Each structure stands twice: as structure tokens, then as C-alpha cells.
Length: 570
Image (cartoon, rainbow, N blue to C red; front, side):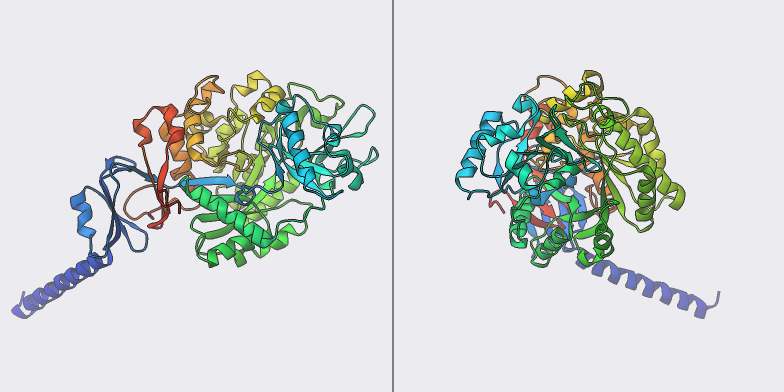
């Protein structure tokens, strides 16, 4: 090798090394931490560590001991002393209705007796003009002592129309005046996908199921956008206080989508939100709203989901679609729906719709409570896979109160997700209605989470708030493990379906992040992931399981920003 060539190589290597050093310095400066968490219990997938450094763009730079993290400390770095508190990934609620969590109308507590409901309605009547509509909820047949009747409401409101939704949101209870003002009589036929309950003479009892509720011509003014904005902002802040850093709104209209955008534009939307637009084959307007979905796309708003209702609920209504007949009977009814429930969308239409949405890049979320509805949803997902291949979208059946084992076994092969509803638990009064309708044998596998996890498919959790009183995920996490009342013990519901605490937390973190399409960004604590985190007062892995429901979120952090602090309430 000549001296000239040797000198040239040495010069090149020297310049290369110098360039590398400069890049390392620049990289170090760029990776200076905006926030450091120290003196805590930071739960990663493999270990519990002491400290964390978070960069200006909300990216986790380092997790480890203080010596490791201090390398990223700068003069402007904010340091939070956790004083022993625990840090976990932020929670995802994959099925929620935030704007309806803010109560409007004439409402009473879930589980209220007939006497309590009548007292509440009587009080609401005093503040209304004659024939002014009274709306509210939430009732259930078990707490009433049996099926409600219009005459029960007539006693306290003969001159005002009353319409009350049930605890599930799938049935409506009206008084005689509400029926009359809506033109609902003995001759009124059932709507497709709906049932008018009738007495032995064929007169409407006042209870309307599913689509039949649309016959009620309620004249109450719908909420204004300002009222919806207030309700949504309140609900999202409530969710932040429980550590919910991202969510799927499972029933979005054009007006609600605009409200999310208004919150985002004002800087008040902190969570990552997926919007699911409602669709049905009879709603010609739905495709128009879906077509304009990207008008509502923002940094933290992803309008890429469609919601379809496949059936109803497995309560006294018998509207959830079941493979085997219901255990009890409905007086005055002896039709197919009373025996096995309702499938609301024809299978051929459903398969074509899901295949089309899948090709459009839209995730499909089904309401599917009964095992026949779950099977129909999986059939539609399978049809989409056969037509389009795997598009990377995890279509999901929601609720899954009952699933046949054959369907659990095939979910993995078609990349289907089971979205469970573990919040619907004791002491929720809806359970008693379900148990009466379904019978004790099938209740042994009610919400079969363990079977679904062991089947290998993706399993996530959703609250369905405000069908349930609280959006607190710690209630669901504890009861997924115990299958008992939070903190109380007592009867075990579906003992064979108990899962571990780690599995329960995974449903709300890394599993749901994957379902949301953010598995490469959130759901785990490790360098390179976004800092969507919660700081809690106790390590759930170090306390007795019956204490988990009482865990308090002290701070919620999204993208490295503290968006909720319990000490200030903001």
C-alpha cells in the first residue's frame, strides 16, 4: 500500500470518527429529558425499575436507575419525585360512550325499586308543564319485581308523557300518554328488528325493545352542541382521573364527531380517541357520514371505525341472539325471538358490508352479546379475510357475554378480537336479569375471558360506560381475577373464567394498544415508546387482590404531559 493511499485512508477514518462524535453530541442534546420520574416503582414487562427519562416529544428515553436516567437531565428538566408510587402504562377503554355519561333528564340509580322510580318521576312532573316530555333511566326488571307496565307510570304521571330507558339501553318503558302521543296502538305492527310487548288482549304494555323504541316520538329537545361539549369534556376528564389515556367511542354521529374536533381545536382533548361511526343497512345516511370521516381526523382523533349492532341483550328482553333457547319464557310471547333472540342484520348483507369496510381500511366493531351473534360476526370477519387477506385491521366482537368454544378456537386464525365487558358485574342489577333468562349452566361461562385468552385470539376490555355506573378500570381488573363483588367476596360468577392480575392489566394496556393500532407506540413502558403513563398510589402486584378496586390514580401522563394531577383535580 503506498503512503499516499495510507494517508488518505487515515484521513478518511479520522473525518469519519469526528463526524460520528459530532452526531453523538447532537443526539445527546436532542435526547435531553423534559421530564424525569424518580424514586418510584416503574413496571416494565420484565422488571420494576426506579426512574424514567421522557423527551420533549413525549418519547421515553430511558428506564432504569438514577445513574442511567441522569444522563438525560438538563437545566430545564422537570423532575417529579414519585416518593415510592407506582408507574404503569396508561389504560385503554375500547368501548365507551363518554358524552352520555353526563346525566340529563329524570334519572334514578341503577337497581331502583318501583317505589323509588315512581317517587322520582312524580318529582320531575312537578317541574314540567302539562304534556311536557319526561325522559330518563335506568331501570331493570329484576329490581322492579317483574316486567314493567305503562300503568305503573300513569299513576304518577297521567298528564305528562314518560319515556325511560332500561339499564342496557336496549329497551324503553313508556306510559300511556307517551304511547298515545306517538300513535302506538294495538294495531301498530312490530318494526323490523324490534318488539312491542303486549298484554293478553294485544294492547302495548309500554315496554318496547330494540328498534321498536324508535316509534316513540319523543318531543324533548336534543342537547345542543354546547351541552354536548360540556358533557363530553366532563366525561373525558372523569376518564383521565382513572388513568384512561385512550379510548374508542363506540357510537358516534356526525354531530358528536364535530364536538370532538371542537375539543381538539381548543386544546382540551388529551386522550387518543378512535371514533366508531354507527352503520346499519337501513340507514342510508350512514354511508355519507362514513365517507366524510377524514374531515374529523386530528392528531389524537382517529375516525377509522364502524359500529354495527348484530343483536340485543340477554336480559328479560330475550333480544341477544343465542344458539340455544333461553331458559325462561316471556308471558304472552311464543315467537322465534322470544326463544332465541334477534339477529338484526341478515348474514349475506353483513358479510358484504364487513368485506367492504375492511377493504376501505376501517375497523369494524360489532355489538354481539349472544353466542349466535358472536358467530355471525366471526363469519363476516372470515369472509373479509377470504376476500381481502389480512389487512392489519383487528375487527372485534363486543361484549361477548356468551361464546361457543368452536368460535373461540377459530378467532386466532381469522385475526378476530374479543372485546369483553368485565364492568358489568355484581352488584350490577342487570346480572340477575341475565341469570334468570339464561339459566345457571350457561352462566358458568358468562364472559368467558380465560377461554378466549387461551384460545390465542386478541382479547381486550371495554367499559360500555354509561351502561355501567362507573368507568373505573380497577373495578374490572379486580373482578376479572376474583369473579366476585369488588372488595367483598361472596358468590363467584363463572369461576372457571378467572384470570391472573397480569393478564387483566394486559387487556387494558398492551392488548388494547394493539387493537387501537398503537401497539408500536403505547401500552408498554420501554425506550422508544410514547410516555402514556399513570402514577398510582399502590403497586397492584404487591397488595391483596380484593384491594385493587380501590387503587387511586395520582397522575395521568399523555405524550409526556401531565394531563391529570389528583392534588389539583386537573
